[in-house]
Image (spheres, rainbow, N blue to C red):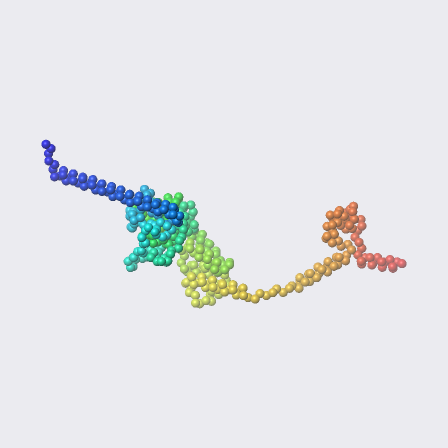
Amino acid sequence: MEPEPTTAALLEAILNLTNQVGSLQAQISSQGQQLAELKAICKETNNLVGDKDQGGAQTKPGPSTGPITPPTHSGGEAHTPGTVRPGLKAPFRPSRGTGFDSEDEEPRLPKKEPQGTPRRHLGYLTPFDAGSSVKQPKMDLPKPFKGDTRGRKATQWLDRMMLWVALHCNQFDEEEQMVVWILYHMTDKAADWALPIIGNIIKGKGNPPTTIQALTAKFKEAFANPDAKQATARKIAALTQTTTTSEYVTEFRNLMAELDWNTEAYIAQFVRGLHWKVKELLSTKDNIPDDDLEAIFAASVKIDNICWENEENRPKKTPAKSPVSTATTSTTTTQRVRLSEDPNYVTPEERDRRRASGLCVKCGQKGHGIKQCPNGWKATPKETAKVAQDKSEKE
């Protein structure tokens, strides 16, 4: 006969059974989550296939469409909409399309934020409200950044990416998700830099950038040209107005975008490079604030436009004929008349004809050239008259 179990043994057995039941429940929950993910993927695939069969607008998944949940740092599997990932503050609910919610999803109303809450960093870039009837403009998603370019091209890609995110900010619940979305669209060398940051954001480790401003600073540290500011400072110092003031302002603004000077330095450099006439007229305008760069831009462009308009409307003077040219023409004509009266004068056309025929240029006969001509030059009218006078005197 077996001994009766003690109370301690019974408690231990109950605890073991409880742990096993909890483990089984966790496995069931995990399998249910996986089934939900598979259902979502099948539904997504079915929608895509259905759109293709019906001849509707085909939506290709990938970087060229709307936000798609980026993979985790370790497993690489996509989370379904509404799934809370570790390290993220809110569920990531992407939608298909090029910036609009799909038809099978309920329309999402704009979130009501409590008073005093600062606006989203990129929200002020777009005036479109998620609940507005105005249709948002469509913008193609920029191509993934490979990291093989640095400097201005890299920062321009980031600016275009942030503009895309701003136009589709209603698809993101948190600014942190915008950061992950931008990092997800980096490949090759850039992905080697971005994936560890995504992993830290998902796992909640370290101090990764979770705002657009922090991401911009970290991105520029990695991909911006360290000598770009010095080179741009040299360019803006050498910039002067050579065409219209409008073009000068445009070039000046482009260089300003890469610098972080204060307003006084910008104004001093801009005025230094202005055309002297525009600068002179600008100094007479007392109603323009000395510390308002935009007002100085506008006033300079207006002054230059007025100067060009006055120059075009000014009556043009017809140039007077120069008497020197008339005298030269008459002198040339007189010389030609005198040459034609000379019996030894041979026209250029006649010279070419005699050379082509093998004749002497001087006398026009065959058998010798101009240097061996035995005939000599013909006597001029004055010489003929003198010879006749000598003969009459001898007689």
